[in-house]
Amino acid sequence: MRFFSRYTVKLSVCAFFSAAAIILLSSVLAPALLKSALLKSKSQYMQETAAVFSHTLESDGFDAVSEYAAANKNGSGLRFIVTDGSLCVVADTSDAANLCGQKLILPGTREVLDGGTRFDAAFENGEFIYSALSSFEKDGERCILFVRFTDYETAALFSKCRKALFFSGLAFGLPPLGFTVFFLANFGIRLGKHSDSVELLTLGKYVSSDDIRGHDEISNAARLLDDFAKRQEKTEELRKRFVSDASHELKTPLATVKLLSDSILLTPNISSEDAHEFLTDISTEIDRLTRICTKLLQITKFDTLSGESEFVRVELSPIIENVCRMLSRPALSAGLELRQELQDGCFVLANYDTMYQIFYNLIENAVKYGADGKEIRIYLYLKGKSVIFIVDDDGLGIPEAELARIFDRFYRVDKARARATGGTGLGLSIVATAVKNCHGTIEAQNRAPHGARFIVRFPFCPPDPEPISDEGGRQQ
Image 1: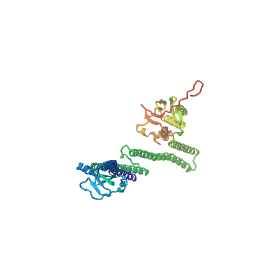
Image 2: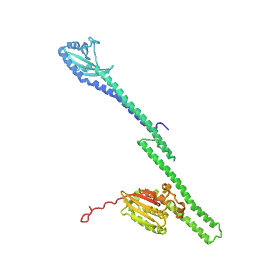
Image 3: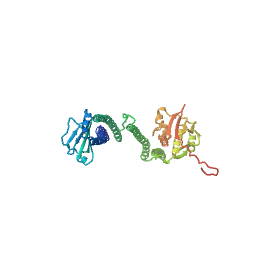
Image 4: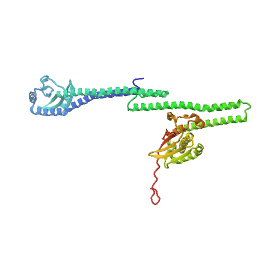
């Protein structure tokens, strides 16, 4: 399995560039913006200083430069250079690199001589250097004043800020980058496991994904996939068992029909009585095959039910009464009494045929397996938001070990009795599927001291409120 998928590689690249952008912003762009702001910050100050000093030179002469130099011999970072009309330096406040007597032509000199001003700023050798050029008139000549200011304190502060921004960029950029890479590596591994599980599922191999833990989207998807795989595995097992059971159930009557028909064909002078007996047995087996096929078709119908679009609001008590009328004769023949306790107003969202099938199969099952001379009790009532339907009989009940499989297809507790009564082992499976389609639940229990009980619960569907009419008969 690859450590990174294509998706995680893309996310890793995005995370890398995001971290690089943070470091670049904090260590390069932010200092550049700060330096640009600091370089422009002294513009007004320098131009005002040049203007004031030019005015002083016009009134006091060049001696003002010497006086300023004597007053600031410890150095304040300011340097004044004055040239005469021929651009020869006549005064310079610097002792270390005094330019007196030398020609000084600076950028912007012509502009300044024409009456303009010029401001320049630069960051050189770790120092902020600000300069201003202005002109003044002295003894009929146009002289130039050059003011230069070196800001050592701001330069030192800027160097500290630049270092702080660089290290803060590393601090804010590298840990998220490391965390993102770790997260994406873990994400890639977990996503790879999830992808492998899906691939195995598509190949029909149902593998659990319980090793993926957590509460994020991948963990939830893994749990859903695991539940789906288990349901698919169970469905596949049920399908295989259904095919096996159906084949077995269909094979027996077909083999009997084949044997009886061969017996008739291989007996040249068979008597009419024997032929009638064989044909009667063949008819019985064909009826059995018909019942099995009918039940299978009913199961298929319920398994492929399109949804609630066919459902309407129906009341259950009239359906149960109709079923009991249909089964009253078989119950009477078996020496059983059908006792009903039905509450009116029990509405559910379903359809008539489905409800009829559920009640008919459950009550018929109780008639087949109830004790002779006893009664079958049928209850219907509303409890809270549920409609409860119960069928009790006084038969032998269901072995406890068989309760979990009672609703499986083709499963019969007493196979000998089921064959004698024409049972196919599909009736309760049909009921369970139909109840589930109606959003209900079904449960089988044993009664004390003997007998079986089937409990079906449906969501109650309350009737719509009737409109209120005023005295004139108009609806409000």
